[in-house]
Image (cartoon, rainbow, N blue to C red; front, top):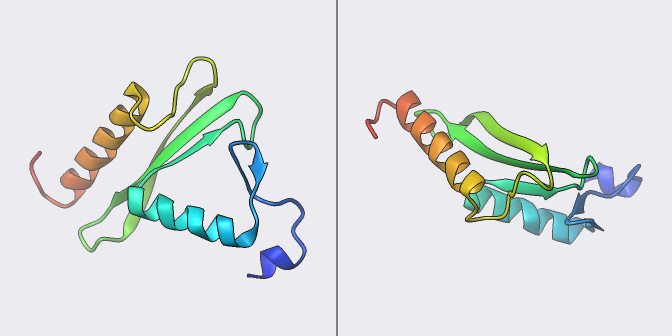
Amino acid sequence: ESFYKDPPALPRHRGEPMQKAAFYEHLGQIKAQNYCCFYGDYLPDINVMGSAVYDINGNISSVISLMGIAGDIDVEPGSPYHRALMECTRRTTDTICGRRG
């Protein structure tokens, strides 16, 4: 909450600054989908995607991320890199939780 009182810069997504309500809505989407993609928002021409790994209690234990040059790494949902990341985090979570995949 205090961040939005005097932010050094607003959070950005797809090149656009996000006001507080949009930012909180975006955080809800990230939590529901278990992934987040950034398209040059923090470093020009760098795409980033991350997905959480959960422990046996359902808590986030770590995050697996993929980062690369925007022209080389497509982080759009459904892309080969997105599918590989989601499979990796699913299998890692299953391993941590003692489930066989």
